[in-house]
Image (cartoon, rainbow, N blue to C red; front, side):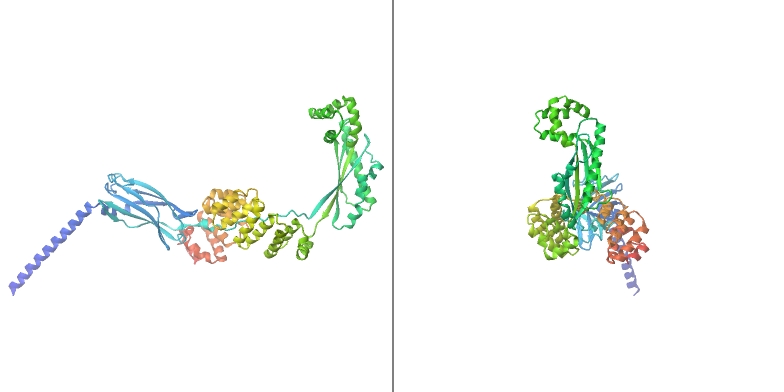
Length: 585
């Protein structure tokens, strides 16, 4: 029995010794293998590699996410015979998307890529871009690397290098502006009634014979009808008086003033004789001095033999005294001028201006309901502006379109109503009809917004280029596309001088966080998104108070913005902040 115990003990000791030697051999082998496998060594030290990603968080611009990866390796890290492939990967709820990978290699590796020095270490940079997909705002960016050594590959641990994607450009409002073709309707028309009063040489007295001339009689014949017409109103009396270009200039200037005054008195007396009362200041009288312009016009129309010579004198001498002297030197010709031309220049030109009132708004509305075909084009277009109801406007514009089929304004304005009703296909058909009649800047703008709303940005811009002069709406419409395409400099320029949500957004995206005034002076100032945008501006500028206050207002107006703010990378540095959390939860 004792002998068996000794034998078993001896056997146990031998087995223990054998197992210890085996473990030692395995450990030694592992050490040798680690020393011989540079990939294993690099994996063990992978935490020493520095990576930076710009921007961080990622940002969506245009329809893409672009990034720049920069990194550095420490000395004696990157084995001379190793090569590596690094792939930036965005991970989100919809799955994963890979950016273009980049390659690195050791000094003697025959693979492609940026060479990293073993002794000194090295650095690299890489840029890449992928299309943005919905859901990527809530994402992380990983760098996934694999190394190759002597035909064998090994993956390194994924490295998270960025969190979230800013998608603020997607806040752009679809506030594309169609343009309505306007009417030329006037509330009243001014009707000119012109007569002339002529004078004897060097005289300003209005002769009785002048007040019985045919033009005065014709004017008087209208007085009764005008007084009975409730739409006619005496507006003003405008008198311009002249002297013929003969004699002293200063004397002629005074003479012209006296003739203006005498004509004014004669005309006011004529009105009073016909029981027409006019207010104080009804007559505006102006003395114009010597009438050289009229003299040249009458000479050109005359049959005077030497008229061309006289006209050359007028054109040669700017000094009026010299002109008169040279003309008088043509003795025989001057006598004819004095007889045929000068008497016509000794005059007062009188304009009795009447104001004719057009249909009132109530009259137009009555005719719209009872006899719309009696309205002319301008009256009908104006009448449509008297209603807020889109269906009523549409009915009037369709009546216009039927009565005036060759006027582009009809189909353009029907299309305008369809845009407001979100009937884009119908609107496009009407705008194309208008464009076939006349391709105006307004119609091109409207065709542009249809293309934009249908997602055809380049086609929309092509129309906008043909819409120059249609109005400030064109630039605002361009600005929307600029934001969508990520051209914030152009967007800011196109929204210059505009106070709106999109104008503020363009400025924010262009690096200007001071957008409060642009929003507060806009029609969008009370919108929940306006406060949300101001909260983003506060976050970007590091103003926590402004961020929280505006976010509270935004979420109180629209509770759905709480969930949006939680995932919005604009607020990523505030996610653990107690005030932020209480606002969005």
